Length: 131
Image (cartoon, rainbow, N blue to C red; front, side, top):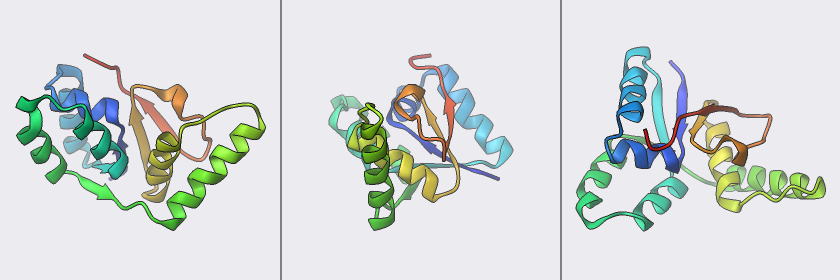
């Protein structure tokens, strides 16, 4: 059993019932992997919701474990942003917090945007977007 933090792209595809995302999330049940989200994903999904999706989104998040974001995650995100900036790479605060949440549960990060997560401390699993 392993933890898997679902990034916003994956959460949206699950919410919209896209077949590949649905199959992968069901596959997680078979392997007893545990899906997680964090407040950043909740925020980003809520911000882009269609009116008809509100109830389904609430149910989705009620069925996921939510990783708390605290000082440890904030610190890690800040270190990544600082270190990558020193190398000429700009990372977003939100992406660094999502990555820190994945790191804090010792799991992997499932996303449609793997290039946004160049951190070597996490395992990034690409899920196709929109399928």
